[in-house]
Image 1: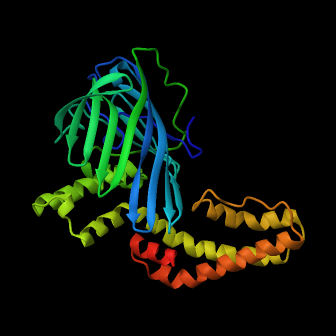
Image 2 (image 1 turned 90 degrees about the horizontal axis):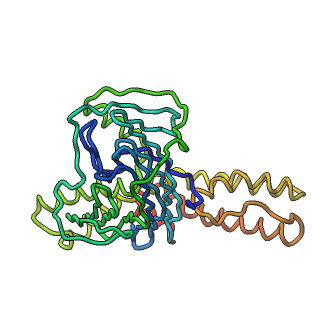
Image 3 (image 1 turned 30 degrees about the vertical axis):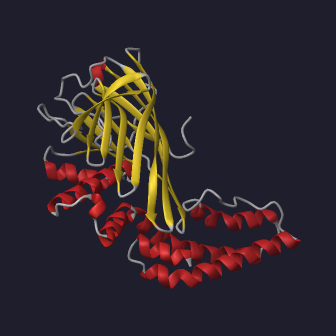
Length: 353
């Protein structure tokens, strides 16, 4: 059972640098077909006051030696501490032989490009073979690099791990069955309009920027940038100055910061409007109608959201109105600090006061 979040459905041949590219028409895996289930975990401290937790599940199904694949994934990013945030991402990618489709749910369209013969990429580039491990009952080859560890079975990833500055991501197979009949007909991509892209790097990069980035992709990209800085300065991660370390962590949490900067003023305005609405309401049904907008916004911060009130009279009404007064006053006192915050560190400091 997937998490109670929007399911990330990926039809793919590669997810966030996870899977192996092969030349069009060639076998990608040394297994004809299979089904693999994954558990996803990760996170770490973004600031002294704010933690990030990653959790999710995934399923990979493939046939025809990996020429056609389906990967379903549900991942949830939960920020706790001074900053509270919940992030789910809906992504859909499909690759069948020489055609790749990326679904842009936000703009309700499908981005398409062809995979040309001779186009290759490998997830093992720059990694060293470090022996073997047993994952989901299968012996796989372990490959490691700076902040990266992978375990590959006949070309199929059974373990993907990234770590940088105390932040981590792990996708680990918990079950795998091979050489079985698999059907990819149960899941289809949405019937959105298709936008085709030319086959040159600039348009491919433009296309990539249009799509949401899950945590594993952000962490991998930042890890690569950081490793370049460390190499250029001939130092290790442990030698990285505290200020530079803070700046890199702020990059990892920048999407959370940008979202909070927009939502916090909205939640304040919504609470004020709701407070007025509630004061003028004399029955439970109307009170719940007043609460809908603020509950919808709060659901982007935390799962602990008051969906409705059971009673709207006497002490219960007074209690809820007093809660709104307290929360409005508290957030309003922090708003100047929030508006001047430049990064997630600044914002965490504002919200802990």
